[in-house]
Length: 420
Ligand SMILES: C[S@@+](CC[C@H](N)C(=O)[O-])C[C@H]1O[C@@H](n2cnc3c(N)ncnc32)[C@H](O)[C@@H]1O
Image (cartoon, rainbow, N blue to C red):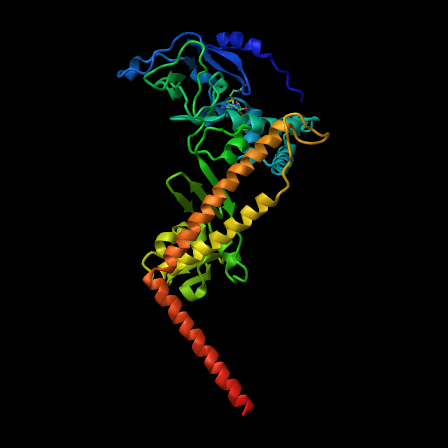
């Protein structure tokens, strides 16, 4: 279905007709960012009495597209309700094109019994619209304090800046307002920016919004964890774990941190006290359950960091986790730095290549991630060295060495026996 689009010049008239109040801002073209909001006059900063702060723009509740609004709409539009019903609880739309087209195929198949949606979804070009809708949603939705994730026309013209000048809120009536966020206010002609989230990684920003915030100090990335080689429990661990099997790395000037509940499960073995059992219920249904030190922890698979805390080998488990992570970081660093540079310049663009802006952004992301991984590698080496000096680790490794030596000498004397 070819969607008809109004030019941006029509936006003020549309806003007026729909009751959007643009009191002290207007939409203007902003270099490198598309359009944005610019102050029409000096906007005073936030006063101590926040209730008297005048909204820069105000969007009536009826225009807010939130989960609540979708439900309300489904009550009055039977076709829409039917589509929601067949769609069921679809997982959140994944931007990967293959996933999007699979989702679209699934939706079309489920809706094939509904004549209205079957006709609409079979029209040529609808998959492209579906992909566009996903990109629009990702880049324009925001989280309201009460209505939750929502799309708010007018407010979605505000660009992002880490030094944002405004913030959004909801009034008691459910209208959405844009308010100055600092005491100094906004000068006439200045761009009115908001924050799209202060903790978003470069990858997340690029993935959702199509740009990387050059000023952001956030250096974060997530790496996928695979089963460890020769781990007989590997498959069961992935099956039973409820969250994403990833490790999140974050690096600031002061410190490096990693977070991965799954990694603590991944490094445990049967000899440590980990066990899987199949439980059968009264109806004959079978279910996989996980045990730690004979306690059923099936509902707590993301708590292994604290579950191992009091175990005598807890520092050994940490050392294992750090060693796995160190290998993972080194492999990822190798992979991304070995990738051929696109050699992109602003001028060059060969046919059939992605847009220059996209390739520059990809290179920027790779550089940022390489810096994060290098910082992570150095910090992990220190963490490993510190753990290797821990008295419990030294004692454990010493006892392992003794056992190995004993086994080796037993074997040698057996071999001597054999030859005697
Ligand atoms: C919610 S919209 C903001 C309005 C948008 N500029 C427009 O023309 O419709 C989000 C999009 O604006 C652009 N954008 C926002 N902040 C930006 C920034 N700091 N630098 C570059 N692009 C930005 C990105 O394309 C992003 O996906």
